[in-house]
Structures are given as structure tokens and as C-alpha cells.
Length: 446
Image 1 (cartoon, helix red, strand yellow):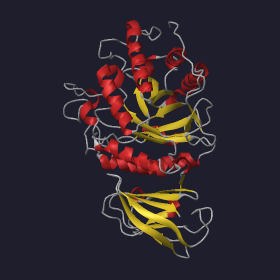
Image 2 (tube, rainbow, N blue to C red; image 1 turned 30 degrees about the horizontal axis):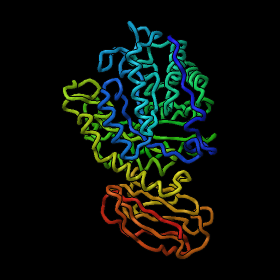
Image 3 (cartoon, rainbow, N blue to C red; image 1 turned 90 degrees about the vertical axis):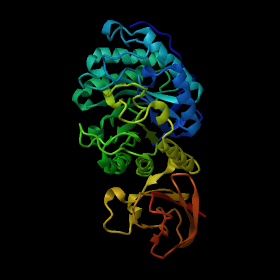
Image 4 (cartoon, rainbow, N blue to C red; image 1 turned 45 degrees about the vertical axis):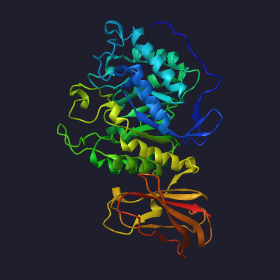
């Protein structure tokens, strides 16, 4: 591969916190990973579209864009007709193709956005890019890409969406190559396919800084959205976790493929955001939308859910409600020491015994500061347990230790509840929520 000029920072822009639960910037301030899945934006989009997108997402408060370095399938070229490799030879990068990534990454960096770049998409899945690379070719290309792009605001993912346990040695080698090639030590992960979510792949790998698990585009994903972050939060050694691909807004349910089911809406985005964060995804969250992930343009055919019958084009998808409602959630969390969140699902329960696990409240506390509880739509009243227990509630006395309010996750409006009179047994039943929709219950220490 051709030699390229490396661009080094004096200090790594992001690194793991000392407790390995979240990222911090170069000054040591907690960094909220708030991302969007814009996988195909560079190779399918044009520069004026990139700028419009980046400015809108920056305005909404997003901090990361998740992007594929190679096209979705190995026989595709970019919007200008550039294939990523000369004559299909993966050892000969096409400069015209990768120069467009230089421009995009610099545009994102200038707006304060980090790019999580998926280097070799697909793992051992036929027809996807990574399957074309031998281990030696994959490690060589990964080193080349890291050295080329390290001067921008970067996070690396060695691949995405593949069954990596089928080629464990190959992907360990790629991860080690990325780690060794990057003088700036940008954080590194691997975006795991839904079916591998419970396998804790790379958990003890030195190159692997945080888990990025996708919960997929299936209606039953509510259970995994709740259970996976908690399981990873409790795993040892400690390693940060982010849900890197929950339901895409405006995307159909894929439970009965090849048939398409109902469309996921903004309620699904709120659920994925709040339940993930309060169940142990203390690093942040990734939003996604149909039309954005596949960069759908007018006239696209049906390939990869890009056709006229399936979802909006990218410019319309950019204004879907779910992104702004996740942004509202981030603004709320930034009023708290969100990086100190500790999931405590056992401390909140629905008062109805018929409430299924996926509709139970999601609960986390910040010791000495507060409790945050998400109540899914149609849930019944909620009880909190242990508000007067030292080391659990954060205060050791009964009485008026807390002040409560409801947060509307649709528009950010707050409804005061007032002082909480904690009974002697520490079990407090919250008043009826303002509507049958989903709500967030906030308790602040007085």
C-alpha cells in the first residue's frame, strides 16, 4: 500500500476514564458518547449533504458519527464512481475514494464531532467487504487507514455486523494492529452483530476499550435493551458499554423476514435511550434512523431497504422526532453527574404483578445526588425501594430527603411533585404519572 503522512496529536483527544465506565476528553472531563448511525454518508453522499447533516447533528448536541470506511457491499463504488480499491485489489487503495474520507473527517472534526470509523465492515459474511481480506491483508489495511486518519477526531471500530467468533484470531490480529499503529491511542471497539450480544467477545482483549453491542431491528429487542447493558455493567473486569445500534426510527420490524412488520417510531427511540442508559450503558447511546444509515436518496432502488416504499430520504429522516427526543434526554442527563449512574433495577417495581419484564421501570441512582427512573408507556404506578437506606438511597434518614418531579421525554417539560415523604420502611409509591405515555421520574437529594 502507498505510504501516507501521519498526523499526530500531542495528547489523545479521548480516553477511558480511570474506572473504565465512560470516556473523558484531554482535560479529563466526562465525554457523553451521543452518536448517530450514518454508515453510508461518505460513499453515498456529496459534500454539501455532509455539511448540512453535520451542522444539524451538531446543533442537536450529538458528539459522534458512526461511519463505514468501505461501501456496504464489496462491489459498490462511491457517488462519484470511485471504487475503494484499484481493480478490486485490496492491497491497492484508490486515492480518489479515500480522499473523500479525508474531507468528511475534517469537516466533522471542525464541528467538534468525533467519527467512529468502521474499518472493515462485515466479518466473515459473504458479499460484505471484510470477507475479501486475508488476515495479513486486513491488518495491513487497518494500519494504513489508522495512520492516514489518526489526526482527526477519531474512534475506531475494527469491523461491524459479523460473527467474529468464527474468525477470532483474525479479528484479534486486526485489533492489535490498530492499537499498535495509532500514535494517538484513540479508543477502539468492534461493533457486534445482535446474535453475538451475549458472548462478551473481546472482553479481555487489551486493544478493545469498550463494548459496542447492537440490539437490532426486532420488536422483541426490548428485553435485550434492558438486560444486555446490565450484564455488561456487572461483568469483570470493568469495561464501558454502549448500545451502538438499537431500532432505527422509521425502519420496519424485521422479526418475520423477508416480510416487513410495523414501523419503529419515536417511542422506540425514547425507550432504547432511557432504558439503555439506566441499565448500565454509562458511556452513552447511539441513535439511528432509516434513511440516514443507508443515506437514502431520491430514486434509490430496493437494495438494503433503500427503496421508495421503505422510509424517508436522508434529508427528511434528519428531522425525525426521535433524534430530538434523545437529544432532550442527553440535555437532562448533563444536569446530573451522569457518569456516576449506577443501575439499580431491583429498587424500582411496577405495582401491578402483570407487568412483563420489558415494561418494568428502568432505574439508576447517583449516590448522594439522585434517582432517575424511566416508566415505559402503559406501565402502572411505580414503587421505589430503599430511599432511606445508607449506601442505596444515598441518605441515611427517613423523612423529606428527596424532591421529585416528572420529566416529559417528548418535549422536556417538567411537572413538580414536591418533597418526598419517605415511610419508615423506605418504600415510596410515586403519584400517578401525568398521562399513560412513558415518563421519567427524577428524585433530587435536598
